[in-house]
Length: 246
Image (cartoon, rainbow, N blue to C red; front, side):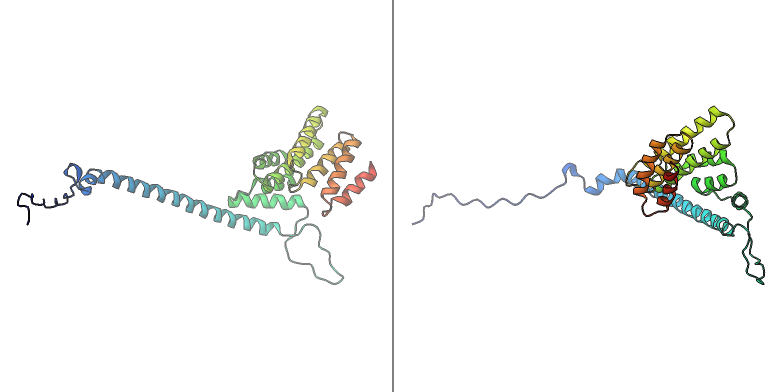
């Protein structure tokens, strides 16, 4: 018999209705910041556009410079020196330069007219060939801090330009100072034993020690090392002649 005193079972409580804290929806919270968000998006878009436009203009500028330099190089391809003709062979109508100096002057004039800049090393080499040594030195200096092979070649060119100026210097003190700077430049040309043109850096140092500083022992050691590192180049033959002179 059921116990009439037993309490009726309570009905389970209904799950709570989810509400937004503070009575706001997510949209309500974002609404005050929409203007700031839109401004930030527009600002980012403007910055991206400016960056892309700058890169595009830079790329176009590089293309124009390449086109200008190509015209200069076309002129520089003309041969230097008198033409060798076989008996009965007519002379060529091809443009020729009498000397390398004449060609360098013509190419520099073309660069100036076209507004072509060229690299510091390329321009420096033309200036040196044209006999404008001080300008060549200034141009080479601009490229000495470049990374990789470009910097190595610029330092090599600078050393040669300084040596060229020293040879033409009448004052003994100024000449010695230029030669010492040239030697220091060749020493810094390629400090990496396995780096490109390391053998040439040693060879140039040996040349200066032999020809100007009159240190045969130092020159010989530098030549031997350059010969070893530059076995696959034209250096061994040049070094053999210098070693024979020592």
